[in-house]
Length: 411
Image 1 (cartoon, rainbow, N blue to C red):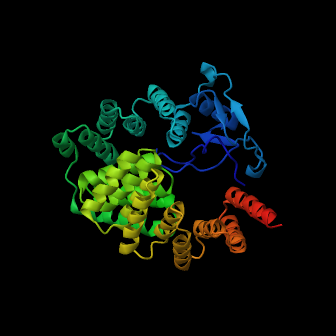
Image 2: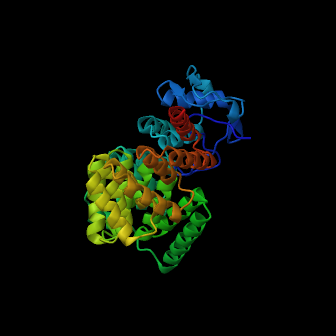
Image 3: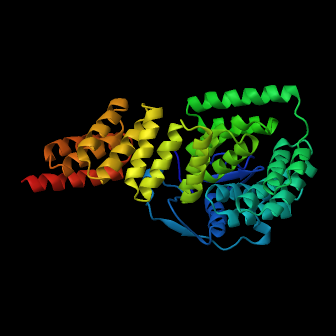
């Protein structure tokens, strides 16, 4: 049975900062010693500022956890009870994954006070510095890791990338030792493995395979692109952005990397940066349907529905089977009070993808705005069923309330 801990979970059985957290509670074993969940949770709570406002339980199943339950950090342990470096390292990974970069930095620095020769901890700290835009500090951390383990490919690769970001391209090239043919073959094998795992929806394993590929061949632009796309799918937006930037640095004409970067920047609220990324992608490949569609989303968010509609039409022109573009076009048309066209567009989206709940919902709202209440109710009821099947119970409930209001108006 699964148990919740903090915002994500304590990571078990992994030495990689980028590993996906596994959800588990009760006890945590380190080097033969066991530490209670409250102690670890207190460590995390301290790192998060004294309190974790999230789902949390020491023994209750996930289904029994109150959504608003929280816990404050206990008093700091005495020196005789000090937690070992491994625990701080695992806590640092959780803090990094949940975006608490300052707390993650503190955790990894604590690790290195206890274990200054731990190369992976230096790499982890370097990644935190890099995410904080502290390039000089990141470079020093990666350099120290490379000094400790000269054959550590991740240390060299991260050092080279940080140097490149700083503008020192010559030194970045010098850091990377020539990759032999066997390494290239192995990198390609890991890349193919990542693609296979991704097709099987084994996202975490795919990410690790792609990381192995780029560690063996730091110039493997396609592997960085696929890594970024998979990280994005796994809701690891910041790490995805770094991967896309690496792909672009290696292959500036890789249009999909610019599209992926745009998606990541948009998710962070940087619409200007996202727009620039999509437009760059379209300069490289004017037929890139995803770039047109995503650019339309930004235009719609700015209230430019006619321009957004034009962008969606371009997306459909280049990929008529892109159901999302049909839905988005329907929304843009509805915003312009063009309900007949919106209805036709939603129906086309549903022909392409019958289980597309937003299309069914949009169709119902368009019917309602036309005064066709029975058709609206039927379409909205189907959207409720789809949202429920897909696990979006909150929105399904909201639509059900709207249906009740329509039915009340008819009485």
